[in-house]
Image (cartoon, rainbow, N blue to C red; front, side, top):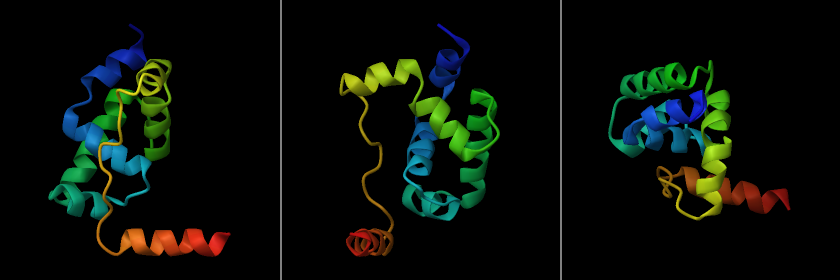
Length: 103
């Protein structure tokens, strides 16, 4: 297993949840509200993720974790699902209306 695969395996379930929400565009405050944790805890989870994946920011972490060769196999096989489907209240409605206005 390569270094990325090893790092991915060391990511905890909670860190995966945080990373999935980051990938969906949530802010630290929104992630905290969604997972019922403080934004400081969210920041600590992100620091651990960055360290484990050897990255410097949210975008790099998402790309490295979700778009690695190993995870692409999992995604294609349909075993990886969105970890969090529900956005905090108020956010989904504005996102939907923005999508309608974009067309």
